[in-house]
Length: 267
Image 1 (tube, one colour):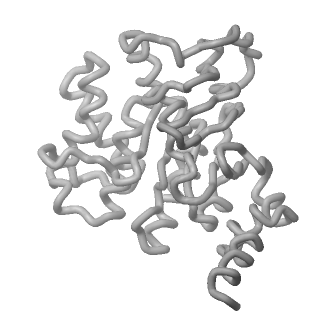
Image 2 (tube, one colour; image 1 turned 135 degrees about the vertical axis):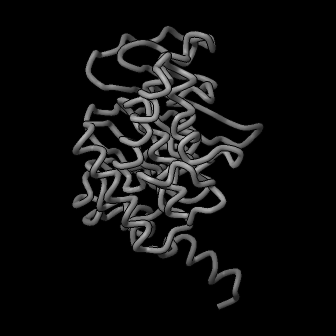
Image 3 (spheres, rainbow, N blue to C red; image 1 turned 90 degrees about the vertical axis):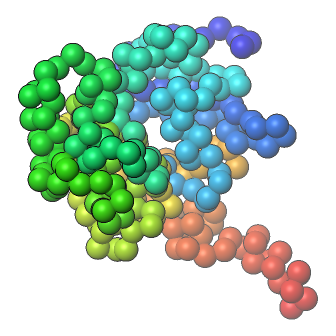
């Protein structure tokens, strides 16, 4: 990796510095810089396939940048060997887009899994922790049920209970409201706010759901063609004059796309 790593500035919980990533000839991230401020909820928006989830995977070091650097609490992590990442990853919670529950485990076993993997707590302590986390998401008492018996919204909430099982400092949400009807989606939004309020977690939410983004965000960034083209508050994004951002927020085609469609359509 060319160039010397810059010195961390000692403030953000997590930093991406000039991160580049391509897959074959497709450039996904083209020099991304991002500082996550502790205690804030940062929402990353953008079109499907633009690279939002790729950013999350760099944060938790499931992917390495082609060039650039990733820091967690002033420690560079993009170059760490896997054995040294175990402790750092235990401080992250990850809510996957499709929940990713283990079908062969009960709800209680799913939530207990990271505790058993990363701690030496007693079975009784684990049972209490599982009950506490399920209570936080409004589902205590269903420990014996199987994922196949749950609704989509319940699966999301169980997956969230598992994501916070180790009391993480940083929770990453990958499209948390995808596939849910509006009332169930708003339950997830309320839980994101609740966890920030009661646990003080720092959060990153990747979404294309502007209703969710405006409700949970302290800060919104928009990823476009490998770069962030907007960084501001929910109120600021509603007042932007950038047509690329406004078109996404309003759910319409950009002027460039409309012009292209008119040419292709012969009108």
